[in-house]
Image 1 (cartoon, one colour):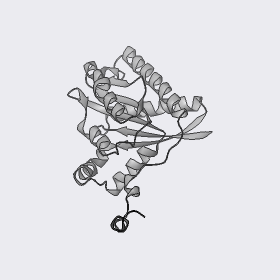
Image 2 (spheres, helix red, strand yellow):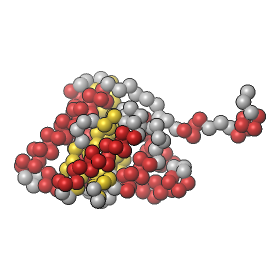
Image 3 (cartoon, one colour):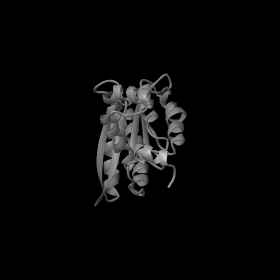
Image 4 (tube, helix red, strand yellow):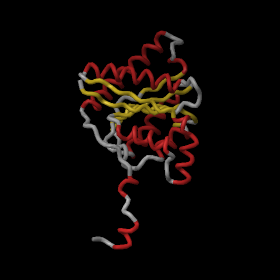
Length: 206
């Protein structure tokens, strides 16, 4: 079987976090859905909190430190992206947004994305369509119709809540797997590799 690479970006602020828990559930469901379609999966998780200082440096200087550069290259080269953020004040977290702010504007073009979010109350679920979906649309990514929100009541406190969450995860993962399976692998995009040497600029065009 051929392999599809999945990058998982999760922006939980604590360890363990409900955002990471949801990201893991989405990853497992995606791997199972891809296997049903005849594909192996290679999944790599990015905990954005581990790169918080590098993200600030990148935002200030315009250049990512080496560890962040490796992570960005991995995400951009993946066949699909699972992105999960906690919801604060009816929107994604600042840390989550900072990661996507440092990406090249074209880096996620045509990238399949499965969105997830966590929060304390069901009312925050609208942030998926009011905040995350417009951001990925602006980046020209291809978001699945189903996005998965998990409130505190969904984490096994009631059997009904747990089953509803499981159904959303399976539906989102199936849609995501269809998009990923249909997508051709693409190389990492590094705009710094295309810089014209200064000496050539001085000489003018040949």
